Image (cartoon, rainbow, N blue to C red; front, side):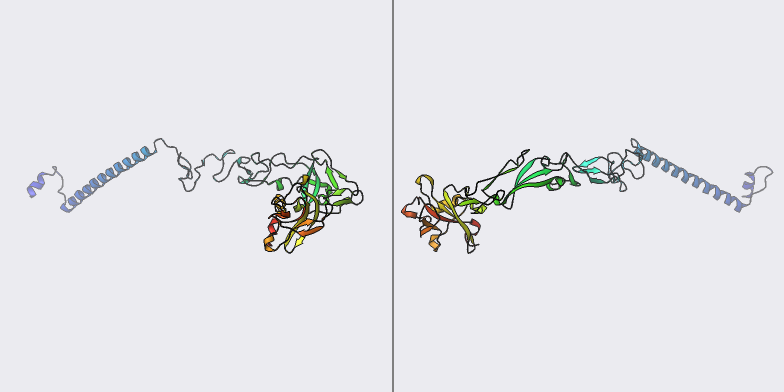
Length: 337
């Protein structure tokens, strides 16, 4: 072995110490292995980079809080998918809006970028508040009233809130109606003319002692003329064409009634049951012992004679009587309710 070792050394070189030679061999082996592993890692990194580049081909880079095109709401930080790069004057914030922009019915974007009620909206239904300076007739608790319209009506239908059109009561608050004439109880001794559009109201009065309400007379001074026989509105005296006289109104227990002298023109016949129904009222039920139909004693007053049937052969004739006194009840309390 010594002879072989000496042959591998250059001429004049000193022999190597065996342990030191083994250390050199181990170091060279370690360096070789490390370089090989690094080469593999570099190759893997190159592959990953190429895959990443391929995935980004055809896309654009946005701010961290924005979404990719066509996928709004995919980024939790930007659910609306809004562009976050340009925050100029015309670019809205994610949850805001452009000031002055219409957002729908009675809704507009306010100066802070939040929705607020618009003052008016042409898409709301038109509101008729009347024409200033004109006159209108209205009824108030049985009185006939003439009102004059004052103030200006809104030009465009106003809004009362976000998404809400104003009601006529709210829209016409600036418009006032001033009472200029009134007939208490719509008394027949006074007649209202005019009070229509541009025509001012005029109250005309009947002469004293003129007939009113079939049996009454007009009484009182000028400007205070009234009929001495007042007829409740539910008695509908103007519709009772077969009644020559209005006799009375009042209460019978819980029931409200109206009484008439009924005598159809030309000697025709009718029953109290038919007469009452024509006025939207009802007669009583004779079978229950009730009395509401009578013969008359004369043709000039409401004086009652003997009682008669209201619906079954009154005056001995199926078609009824040519003259009689009829008491009619309001339907809502005819049964005593």
